[in-house]
Length: 103
Image 1 (cartoon, rainbow, N blue to C red):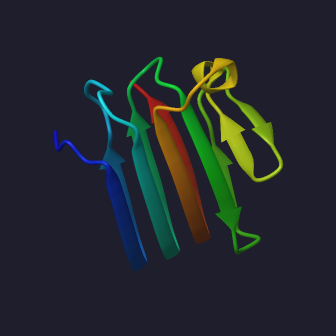
Image 2: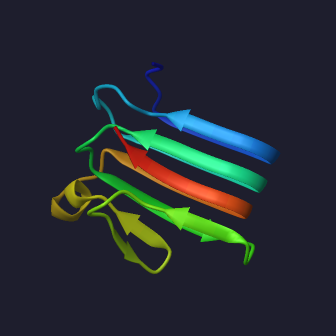
């Protein structure tokens, strides 16, 4: 696991799989921008996560963990609704699947 504070991933096509599990000792900001393909982000279970999700294509689907709340372009884990955010995601997808998991 890397101790990152900010990560910016840009891609055109393919699969982008990010594993952000591990102890949350600092706030993390992650931006993912893919034109075509699958975006999968795995976060630590119980972390306070705020995700801004932008779909540019009509063929995009978004899967969120159970218990998350979606409000417009934003999705919030249960922990994010009660206070400060541990992980802030900015996901921009074109054509393809966007999946956020907690493990």
